[in-house]
Image (cartoon, rainbow, N blue to C red; front, side, top):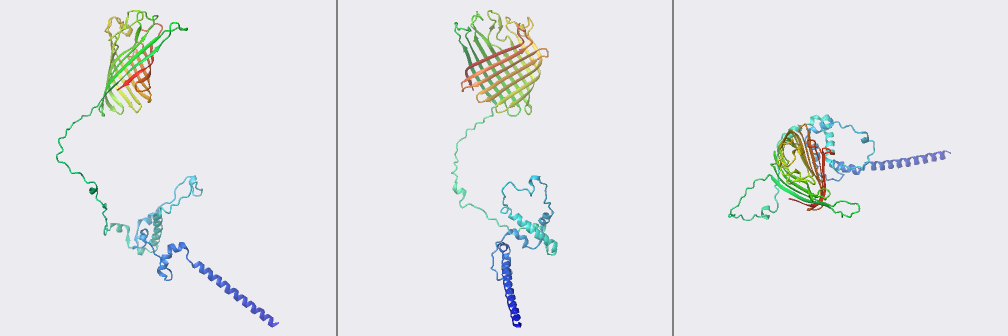
Length: 450
């Protein structure tokens, strides 16, 4: 019995000692694994461990100037104090809170802000040194920056081959002859003109089942201009315009003539402007207009108009607003003081038809005037030219509005629509008609501009 008890105790002691040795071996193995440095530890601190532990291999450390403040005598720098003094928080909209998932792919910035991250880490180290070991501070940033540079090394950059050797100048000739110098003064005058000849025609045979009359019309327009602009203050505009239009008439309408003149304009205008500010000009303008040919009442020899009968002269003083853009050229003249003079030279012309008193040859009016001109290039083939005139002597009104739409087919061919409404309540009113008059023409023909 005693022998069995002793054998059992011995067996327990052996098993216990075996388990103890196994546990010790396991702990030693874990300790060996835990003491092995990780790759990240080896990267940052392996070079420092090799300085005091001869058993570790020496790791070559590349110099990095970003860490210089940790290896020079300790100095007081402004950057650490500024860093801990900054307020790092800022107001953000709800959709930009850090807790919300970004809708964009993440972007790694470590490759671009290395110096910034190193400076922040060094500033934290320096702050701890200022607090725990202020006795080690031997200098300040101000003292360091006030010191003179010990030596400046400047390496001159020079090309391997001189530029002068590559581009050697030609030998200068002393005898260059006599130079013919011409002095050209700037020419501020702009001259040009345009002309057109348009026609329209209708033919109807005498036996046409619905009846009707054949008709043909033609109109010619000639313009010359000479403008001055010194690019500073003064502008002068001169325009000469001649427009003649005729149309055939049937025997039923006029038994004495086969054609009549329906358009007859001779107009000469001039305008002088001195810039006041921006697009406004002090302006004096003058205009003379009359007609060139005789015109008669149908089936009679009663003369309606002729050269200088009537003749109109207008002189105005006011302000001119000008707007010049790529496709628009606009001028609006506002004249609070305007003088109009009308003259009838031919005694056979009835002056009462033009607002004159019976037996009088002239009429003077003093009032205000508004005149506007517009050239609008709607597109490269369509152009609108418009002229508006409004005059009143505060007893009567005289207004006319000329509009020409030019459809350009090519450089020499075009189609035109001319619309000319006119209102004058100072002339004798024709029975059955109002003071509003209308002239319209649609034509096709030649045009030329220079």
